[in-house]
Length: 369
Image (cartoon, one colour):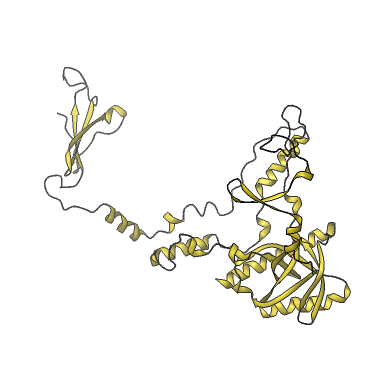
């Protein structure tokens, strides 16, 4: 499992690098942070560039329905019901219901971590040992100047050859973050991480035990189902269909066109995933399940104890009880069961519906009474 996890993550990092290359063809991304990588006596000047595209997000403003003007949020005091200016607003931490302690700018300055502009590597660990739950937000790491190119390439290739990643700390936006540095395609990718106390452990969740609770035939069936949808990882195949459809609706409304409800695309392999249980389920297994669900009771008597049977009787349709023409009337079905008394149900005669007359088990036509 760690090898599979590592392979998928490596492909994802290479995909991020390709996105960065496509973005670079248009407008060079702006460096969000400038500093250096430091471990031992080695220092590599670098820049940090965001690895995601924030323009993909759609932002909306609140408007007044009547005249479509912007809604302005005002700051009101809940106790005095008056508007409060920014100079009279402070930050407070609620330690109990409706009880706060005020934290001033001086208090924040006391615990603020000094910006060292350095990613300090503390340890090199096997990349497969770090779970994906710890990763948070990725940044591209680019060399800062020509003098850093050789050291940058050497560190990137050495991490790939050893299968390790660098764990260290970096100060971003006046806060210290735990981060991991690893190769992704031709780039180094620095990803901020969550601390151990921020991760909910497996034991806190109600989960079934591993390696039990299923049979070998069920595992074989599960493997067959997985193989029906198996394929190569290609991130370009998956799109944010909701945002794309919403953009088309917005563009149509801007141009004054009528909007239509977009058709939802059917994912590839969806039809194959709906039928495998009945298609691949072993026939002998299904027969055994049917026998266990409704065990057969030994026969005794003319119709068998515990076995449902029926007799077909013709009941006249006229009120006087006189027989009517051929094939006209009602069939009375009596069901016999060992667990309850015979039950009679009425339904139209077969001949009245254009169906052949009922026959008994020997193939003989049932006479009318």
